[in-house]
Length: 393
Image 1: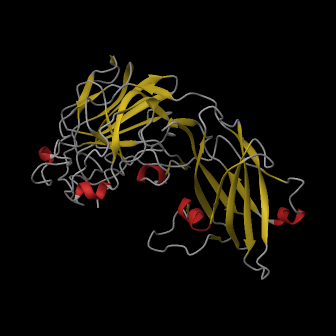
Image 2: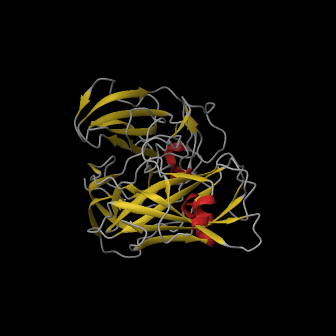
């Protein structure tokens, strides 16, 4: 199985917006005995995709007492908890969005039991109409006390969190032509979305909206002949472009490339090698673009250099924590590849050609074919995970 990227570390930071528990009149006073602290570490920002606005953010829930609790449901409302319910997670759907930081993936939880002192993270994804983005989101959490045989649920209302009413930065193409597979892209379950790595005492998700770009050939495959050779991958060596006028603020080069589809890396993977050969561009207004896994000695820009949109900055490669040739791209609020919060972004124009059902099928040599020959033109949107798109030349 191919994880085209785990490359850039992600970590949540509990600093920007805090949820403080509050009691709604309709909620039983008994809910005040639920000893939880719930907060959103980074405020949600709308991002347009497939004619909807997407609000993607994280909810951290901590149990502050020795009382064992079970999280049974999360409800999200627009504006207030008496308003329209936007989303409800429970049962299997709730299990899918919640993780236990620090717990081995091998030890899967059968329910969302939160012991005293434990923290769980819920990865939230709320879709809204384009013209009706809520200004505030309210959440109601339901718990069961593990010591209570009555199986009673205790609701807890959380204070509203402001939705950042700011348009996503608009980018030009990072690559020419296509078709390009949007791997590990916008979704609520991709490797980029879920990687939680503490760094410097804080947790941030730099790759919250990251995308891996792999080219599909005329035969509908990712590679020709032997996929164990980098040059056989159709995207290998593609020119990587500046997505906007920018200043180069960070460059790393000289890291050798991996052999495709092998678990062993060319160099030990640590904080300095995980992105491979990379470039960071300052796009202005607190937006920084990271390009990862470039070919060694292909980077054509220097720190301090000012460049125009469309300039070639390097070649697509397979360096760092990468399983196969591809480009990793994300936008964040700091020039650090890892210690930053991922920001939403959209592309000015692209054409959606279809969707790949499973990246594993392509990796194992199966072909993708465009089922519908009609071209779906998109403007100021971000493609979804496993979309296949074309940039105009």
